[in-house]
Image 1 (cartoon, one colour):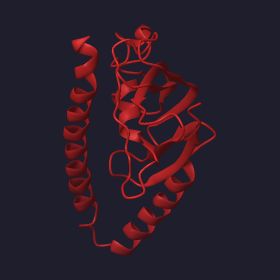
Image 2 (spheres, one colour):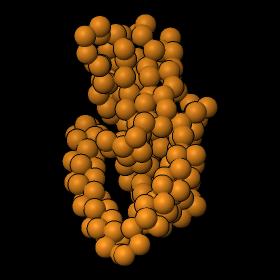
Image 3 (cartoon, one colour):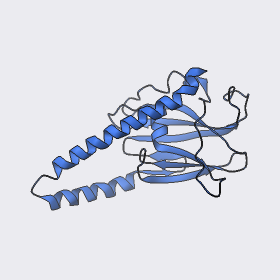
Length: 192
C-alpha cells in the first residue's frame, strides 16, 4: 500500500528534475547552432521544423501523439471507494487504461509518459482551475511494469487514476508537449 501511495509523488519529483535537465541541454544545443555565420538559414530551418512538429503532434480521438511517443486511451471508468482498483481510497476515482508507444531511442516508461503529457481537470470551481490529484494505481497487473523502459517502437499498456471531487462534472484531460509545453488538445469524459 505504501508503494502505491508514494509512487505518484516520486514520479513527479523525477519528472521535474528530468524536465530541468532537458531544458538546459536544449539551450546549450541551440546556442552552438546559432554561432554559425548563416543565421538566416538557421532561423528558416528552425521555423520549418517547428511547422512540421506542430502538424505531427496532437491530442484527439483518445490519442496523443508527440515527437517521441504516442499514447492511446483504451478504457475509462469510475471506481467507487472500496471497489477493486480503489480499495484504499476515500473518494471515487476516474481510472484510465492506455497504451504508450516509444517512437524514439529515448528511455520512456508508461507512467512517466502519461504524467508528462496529461493533466486531469474537473471544472467545478467558478474561481480556480480544479486539477485532480493522482490516485493509487487502479489495476495491480501494472504494478511491476509501469516503470519499465519501453523499447523503440514498442508499446506497453498501463493504467492511471485521479481522485474525483464530484460525480457530475466531466473530467477534462489536457495534453501538452511535456511539462510546461504547448497545449496539444483536450478531451472531456463523462463520469457517470
